[in-house]
Image (tube, rainbow over all chains, first blue to last red; front, side, top):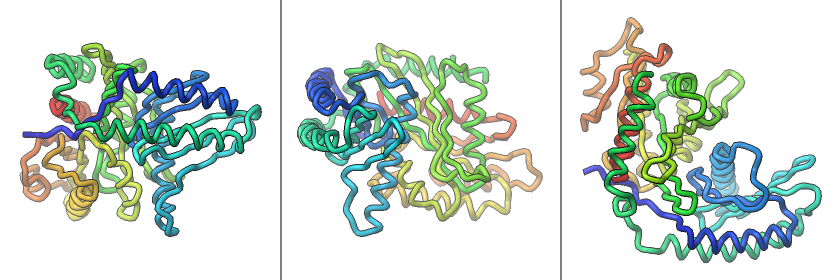
Length: 166
Length: 192
């Protein structure tokens, strides 16, 4: 029997709870947008000004960036770089680890300062870490119990339709 | 590891194309990019060297549409094949839901295929994963070249568990979608 890798789910309740935190962070720090990205490269949610870029590609690159820096950290004898900062002429980004599984990303322009973003991020990351730890510690359900049985059949039909004659 | 996002009603599945250097992993993704309808795919991201060798990964998201209320998407990744890029290769396997091993059928590349396959086992093991527990297909690529092993020879060396194999000529698109269809169906099955 082929086992599915254990899945985790992210629900509306968590999403609402986190959105409140992220909105407060954006208000206090003057950052434009906050994103949460799973370490495997999937976008979990965004708050604030909707990104104008391709957020799917952004999430995969942010995860890769963070993972590569993790490896660099271990090479110089650090267990991790818990946060990263990339400075642009107009736009900058600050990334921080959340519970070793999620990356918090703040995008900000010249209206905000790195010091304020970093200071306010520290608080929000602490709270996010608690929420995600709780979420990951929940008994893991298999995706089987999370999706309707007809999901696979319908998805397979769609795969045939999409890739069938190519 | 699939994440089911009830808040945004999304499921994303990560499929990784693995295999020896110059075996045709990037070519597979480029062909998929060219052929699927533009509205169903995102941007093809390639982190490559100046000589177009994959340095970190290629990435292509393909939308399957909304299934039972969930926007379902495959994230296709390649890894760099060259031996010395193992650190990057391992990072890309994080959270993988399905693997395509793209083997180079040429006789002189058999050892490189075997080495890459062992490297795949080792890297998965470091994440506590076992290829036998994952949706997995093998593509025997470059079947149009003159000096190729038979499929039986390749199976003997690379496919002890008899997972589905597909013959391909990636440069002409032959077998590319058969492979993708096979792995994506296995991934979907593993979810349900």
